[in-house]
Structures are given as C-alpha cells and as structure tokens.
Length: 427
Image 1 (cartoon, one colour):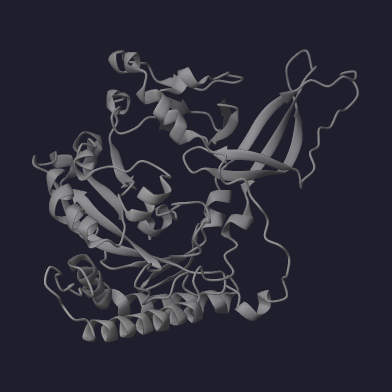
Image 2: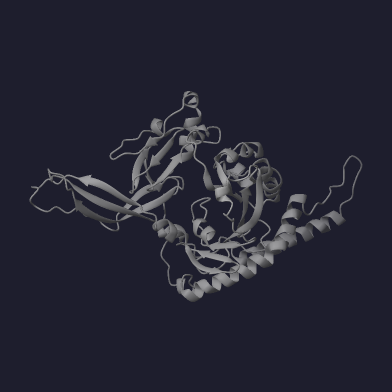
C-alpha cells in the first residue's frame, strides 16, 4: 500500500514504496559450466548498478537481489536465477524546496523595488507628439483568474497538508530538516535522459503502412527477442506472472506481470480499440501547452482539439471513472470542465489536489508563489449512462467520491512523474 496516513483531508503517500511492491522479478535461465552433479550458484552484487528504464515512466532501477533455482527438467543442465529490480531511492530524495521562502521573499522585494522605480519613471514621463503613453497593466486576465482560484483553495491546501505532514513527522516517515543537515555528501548524478520512448513514438508516426494493417496483439513469451518494428503501433502484453525485459534502441525496459502497453501517439489509437476491451478507470495526463514547454522543446504538446479526439467513450466501461491531470492554468481547467468532459459524456464528480512536499514536510514551492504553486489538480468524472444497465446490475450502487481531497507526497525528480492513485481510490 502506498498510503502512509489517511485523514479526513486526504492521504499522505509513499510513491517509492508503491513502485517497489510491484513484482519486478526477472527470471532468467543460466547454464553452468561445471558438472550437473555439482551445485552452482549465481550471485550478483547487491550494490551493482544497472541503467534500466521502466516502461512508460522513464524510471531508473538497480539490481538489488539475485537467487538461483535449479531447473527440474530431465537434463538438469541449466538453472534459473531471479533478479529483482527496485527503484532508485535517490529519485525521491528531495531534501530542500526547489525555491525556498527566503529566496521567494527576496524576489518579491526585488520586484516591488522595480515596480516602484517604474512608477517613479512613469510619473516623470512626458508624452510628446508622435509617441503614445505606455499603459501599465499589472495582471492579465489569466493571472487574475489564477489568483482568484488560489484564494479559494489556499486554506484547504494549507490546513489539510499541515495535518497530514504532522502525522508523517510523528510516525517518522518524514524527517525534520535538522536531522538531514549532517548529510554533506554530493548529490548523485543519475542518467535521467536515457529513455527514448518519445523518439520511438516519433518513428512510429512515419510508418503509414502500419496504420493500414490491423496487427495482432503481441504476447511476450520466454526468451522472446523483440525489435522496434515488433512493438510499433500494436498492443504488447505480458500475461505471465513474472517481469519481462525488452530492449528497444539499445535500452532496456521492464514490463511488469499481467500488464500491456501501446507504443504510439494520439494519432494511432486503433490497435487499442481493436482489442475490444473497456476499462473501469482511465487516467489521462495530457502534454499541456505552456511557455516552459515551448522554450525547452522537451516534448510536443497537444491542442485542445487533439485531446478531444482521444476515444474515451469507446474505451470506457459503464460508470467508468475518468481522471485527468491538469495544470494550474485556469484555461486548461475550464477546458476540461466545460468542453472536454461534456464532449465525452463525462460528468464531473470531484476535484482533487496533489500537494508536493520535501522529505522534511516543506512545500517544494512557496504556497503563495506567483509563478509556480506546490500543487497540481486532478479532475474526476464518471461516464454518463445513456442506456439503462441490465437488471442484474440494478442493485449495484456507486459510492460517492468526496470533493477536494488532498494527495500529499514527495515528488519524483523525473519530469512529470505522477503519484499512484490506486490506493487512494480504494480508500
């Protein structure tokens, strides 16, 4: 379970624990060089580092435990060893806020001084013929909307988070900053840019022939060699009880047991539809357009029209719960509530907030920072049923989902790595 504490405001989550409880056990055969009558043991150093990325999350793992199991075949000439992978704890080692309150206050004072100097200059400004007096606009409409929204939920965020953080400090899950001041070691440099999934999706877009042919679902088998062409625009499944490892573009990815994926972009969703499966919960994290994305050119964003084209009505089971991650930009929030969900026949049932903190319980950004907030939003909705359900489901009652719940957790340092929702939804 990822839930460390549950109170009326929401949940304090341990994202790292949730990932490590996934059965990332890789079973591999080994043929010993010695006689079959002599026992052979395969052992890997528990501190051995291995750059392996988890599928879909760009996560880095370490090989931490290995054991051997003798093969029971008649030949007796091979053994099976198990290699366990766990998530790097360094990726959740957020000991200090990204922007401290002191730096935030200093920036505010600097901005106030600049505004004051500009006001003095404006007072001494003499308009002349041929020149227009410059208008001074303090906030645009989007900023005013964001300030109004923040004012409404500020008390909720502050009070609820404080209760959960206090419980985390009491239980020892969170540690006061004083306990970490003795750690003067240099931060560990991690290979965070080793995932080429975006490049793979881009390659798939340039293969129009695959869009015209209905490819069968690919089921990973033992010792199955998979190439990039095998996984383009088709559903790949791991129906076994063990983790499978595949190599794409020279990099390794772990696929958990009883899971599947579609490596594609929004323009090629038909392989998923061809499986004719529907889902009780659908979580969407769209690449929203914003200024930082444009500047960094880190990834391509989707327009509102493209997001609307996601075939949620065809993928959703009756009473499906649809959850969409949304930035704090009010334009995006209004789009989801007023356009996106109505176009999918999804009725809004709740709005939750993810509050990001450090290991010592501080907000990663000052709560009242005008630039970045320490929280993000989730819009929860249910698919409306146009046709009455069968009589056998008449007694099934959907439990109400509480509004404005908080999910408080230490964020992963990997970009846009969201916390788990499964345990919170169960509770």
